[in-house]
Structure formats: C-alpha cells, structure tokens
Length: 157
Image (tube, rainbow, N blue to C red; front, side, top):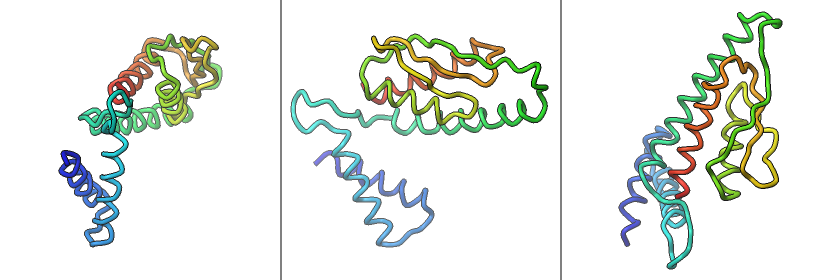
C-alpha cells in the first residue's frame, strides 16, 4: 500500500501539467500513477524494475534543458556559421552503461537532441558511435552525453 501516496502525488502532478482539473483527467492521472508505481516498484524479490526516485523527477528537467540549449546551438550554427567552418564528425563514446535498456535509452536521448545522431553501438556494447553536427569542442559534446548517461544510470539502478 506504500505506492498509493506516490500514485496520488503523480496524479496531482499530471493534473497540474495538463492544466485541466476534471474527474476524468484526475482519474487518468491516478491510473497513470498506479501504472508508474507498479512499473517502478519491484513486486517480487530479485525482480529488476525502474527505481522510483527523485531521479525520475530531476532527469526530465535535465533533458528538457539540454534539448532547449541544443536547439539554440543548432539554430546559431545553421544561421551564423559558414559551411566551411563547420566541423561535423563522428565520435566514439566509451559507455559506462551495461544493459540493453540503458544503452537504448541513452542512444534515443542522443538522437532526440538536435545536432547529434546515434549511429551504432559496438558489438561488445562498450562504445557508442555518435555523429555530431559541430565537433569543434569534443569535450563539450562528451560532457553533454555523460550528463544523459548519468541520468539514465540513476534511473535504471
């Protein structure tokens, strides 16, 4: 029964985010909250699921902020950088994640970010190959990928 307060909190967040307070929307929020709790909290010993923690609240904010900054960077690059000064490239990102679900989540987040595209993962699942629109600062590109990777790790472990 410990999941019910969390489900109600998630329902309240749902209603606040949608901006529509109605019984139908509240009921939908409760159902989504109960589903999230069921998905996140282990039902049996040894069963691995997503941990319901502050990372599930904090990480979407980090992703939205990164997407906003990336959109602005790509717009600046497209509008103000001459083509001959662009340095697109492919970088090999050593992975700290190990499971298929974690790697897939990271790869999708990278692909969703404007200016980057996940190309492939090595057969040993230790390296992710990413195309970057402007690779003039590889350390900055790697740092943004590491931020996503850390968030995925916190959620899945």
